[in-house]
Length: 218
Image (cartoon, rainbow, N blue to C red; front, side, top):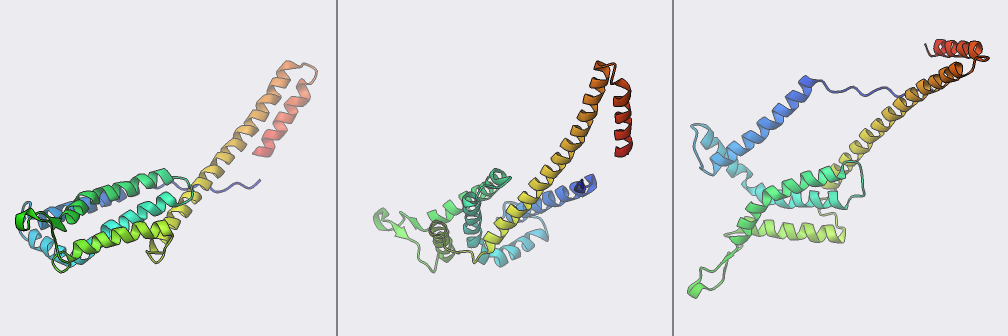
């Protein structure tokens, strides 16, 4: 019987390096965001944060719709191992954008006109907010109607997660089968020994069978 090769576990140094890189990345993002908002200033880094904010400003309205679409696609995907975990992860991504989206939507209209009349911000003045709201509506409507609003990009990402989860689950199942086979072999030998102890007449041949089986396993 051929058994699958055991999966190599990643070394502790590799895991530590990956965790360190992730922590450094998120810390850098938070730092640059605070510097871009002028919460505090650091020489040389504050101008860089403002420069990055100017470059990334056109893409900010795309972030929330993209994350919302990823969350909806994971929710609507057929069940797969780890689906709840990825639903929780993508939900956290969406939750991080809620405050900013609410602020952008609130800036589209206000009661600051004459006699506290409702005043709507124009498309030219609030172009980014209008684009963001429009994309959010398009994502929800497109996901509901089954449109390929993402040109298949988010679908490929979700399918890659699905394939990786299935592969990991299959590897765990094969390892469990290997352990069951080994435990089953040991169990058979224990049964033989119990039969040897229980009967005096078959003691000699059963011991010989046990020795022969152990030699074959070696």
